Amino acid sequence: MPASSAARPAVPTTLPDGVTIEPIDAFKDNYIWCIRAGGNAVVVDPGEAAPVLAALRAGGLRLTGILLTHHHADHVGGVAGLVHALGPVPVYGPADDRVTEATVRVRDGDRVVLEGLCDGGLAFEVLEVPGHTTSHVAFHGNGLLFSGDTLFSVGCGRMFEGTPPQMSASLDRLAALPPETLVFCGHEYTAANIAFARAVEPGNGAIGEWASEVEARRMSGRPSLPSTLRTERATNPFLRCAEPAVAGAAAAHAGRALSGPVEVFAELRAWKNVF
Ligand code: ZN
Ligand code: FE
Image (cartoon, rainbow, N blue to C red; front, side, top):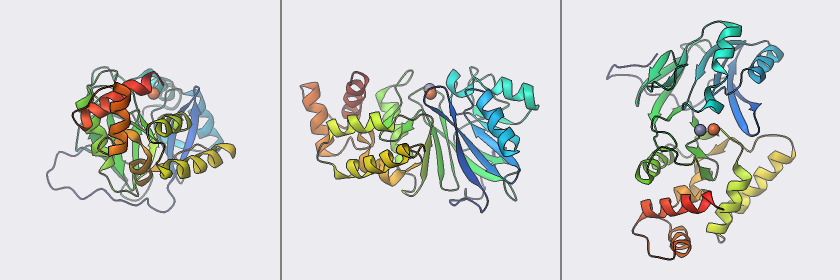
């Protein structure tokens, strides 16, 4: 449950023994992340019910909770079907009336404890990260980050509702988490994002290294994810707006001088929209 108490223990940074994270494919390129341990499972952003029900059945798993990052249908559309088929479970989602599926509304700094996955529950801290939508949240804890459609590997979500200052502040906040944090995002967009990053920063060797790893994972039928925040800081142009090479490329594309990292971010986001 979200905590309101001032004195709460720190969220652990390593995953307890026996807890694993597995992808469930949905739609064309969505991932529904399944956090499982023993016979229990929690899913993140179930846009569809059918693939989750199939995965639970195949794994002999009981659904014990749902995390939602934002109100878009490809992230929440399966909740009703899951609850209908399996009975009610706690559904943690942003404090936004559009997230009608949420049974527990979470805000920045809240602590969500997922029961049934380990002794004492698996705890995550809620981070409000507006930009893709105004009420988007991310869940961080145990060395994991569920970033929804805010941070993608080598990219970021479109700003459907937020502003460049909001979105870049949200990304900066995520990037400031420990570098070894594993990043689980909502879509398989990595290869296309790498193509854009190479156009922005052709001299960045870290992009090529990550591209090789991503290609190997995809060739063997696996997701490109998780990434790490270390990799994202080294490769993701949207986290590198203060780098001279990135700022220079954005200014060249804009055809004018840009006044700082937020303007660089805005230009990169606009460029990526038409790339
Ligand atoms: Zn979305
Ligand atoms: Fe999405």
